[in-house]
Image (tube, rainbow, N blue to C red; front, side):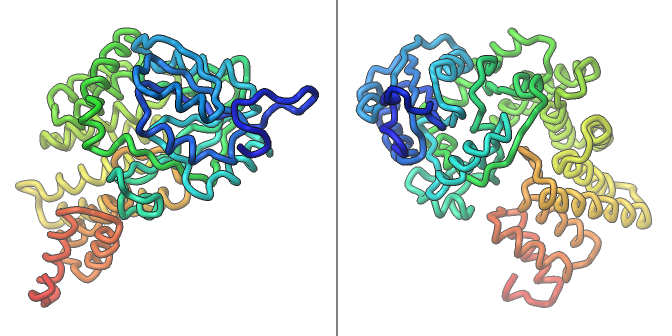
Length: 406
C-alpha cells in the first residue's frame, strides 16, 4: 500500500508506519475485498482480528498482506477491537468494518490528518447506503443514502491506554474524555453497506443487536447510555411500549450521571415515544431538560418544536394560543436548522435537515403561509423526504391555486 506493502514488517531502521487499518471480521469473504481495495495506497499496515470465520475470510485478509489474529467470539465487540489496537504499530488507527469502504478521494485527507497528529480522535463522515449496488457517488450525494451522514470516531491516536468499552455500540468515549477529549473533524467519508435492509435482515442484525443490548444493560445497570441504545433499537423495530419502558428506566438514572455523559439518546427516545402517545407535556419537559443539561442540539430542539406544534393544533386551543404555539415551533425548527449548518453536531438521531424542513413547512401551512411553505417542501423533497413532504407540497399548491401541479 502507500509507502510499504500493508502487513509487511518495516525494514530495519525504517520509521514506524503512520497509519494502521484495524478490522474485526467473521465470514466476510463477499464484502471484505471491497473494504481492503478502498484503503489500497492509504494505510501502511493491516491488522485483522477474525472471530470465527468458516469461509475464505482469513485467506483473503492474508492475501492482502494483513496480519491476522484469531479470537473466538465472546458476545463482545470491544474485545476484538482492543486486540487489534494493541497489535497495531501505526501512529494512528483507521477503524473500519468489512461492510464499509473508504470513499474515493478520502485517502489523502486521512493521511494528512494523521501526519498533523494534532488530535486523539478523528471524526469521519459515515453514509449508510440504501442499496448494495449503489455507487459511492450516489450514496455521498444522498440519492442512494439512508438518512444523513453521521460523524463517528474512526481515526484514533495509537496509545497504550486506548480502550473500547461496551459489548455493542462500543466506543472510546471514556478513553477520549480521560485524555481531554481532543477531537478533530477529518474531511473524509465512509460508505457503509451494512444498513441496507436486505443485508440487515439476512444477517439477523436486529435480533443480534437486541440480544447484545440486553446483555449490555445487565453489565452496565447504572449507565443510561446502554438503556438509550436499547430503547432506540426497540423503537426502530416498532415496539413502542417496550421502547418507552427502557427509556423511562434510563431517564431515571440521568440525574446521577456526570455532566460529560450525554443523556440525549435516552431522552430523545423518551420524547419521541411520548409524541407517539400524544403526551405533548412529557415530550416538552424532556426536551427542555435535555437542552438545560447538555446545551443546544438539533434533536431536542426538534422534539420541543414538534411537541409545541402538536399542542397548538390540539382540541380546544384558541386562535391566539394556536398562532403563538405555531410561531414558537417555527422558531425552534429554524434554530435547529441553523445549528446543523454551523455547529454540525457529531451525530443527529431524528433532526435530519429534510425532516426539519418538512416540519417547518407543515407549521407554515398550518399558519396559512403556503407561499413560505412551498420552497421549504421542495427543498425537503430534493433531500429525499417522503410522503409527508409530498402531501404537504400538494396541499400548498392547492392553496396557491395550482390544482394540476398538486
